[in-house]
Image 1 (cartoon, helix red, strand yellow):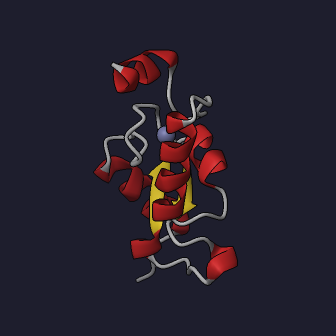
Image 2 (tube, helix red, strand yellow):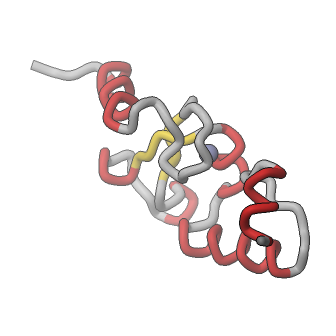
Length: 94
Ligand SMILES: [Zn+2]
């Protein structure tokens, strides 16, 4: 018995309550490759994370550590960070 890809995707989204796994609070709308495919990441379930378009686009081909580090540097430099709302930026700065 095989499981259809759409069923697997639906189960992954259910497991995270339909929210982006990167903690931004937005609804997840696609699956991110935690280790990007361009960096050797696979389509294995352990490498797939439901996330929102904003986080997925921001992360791009970076690893999670590289992405978070880049955001920390951008925040420290006072640059806008795409994945954070203005309210969250204010909370980080407080
Ligand atoms: Zn997100």
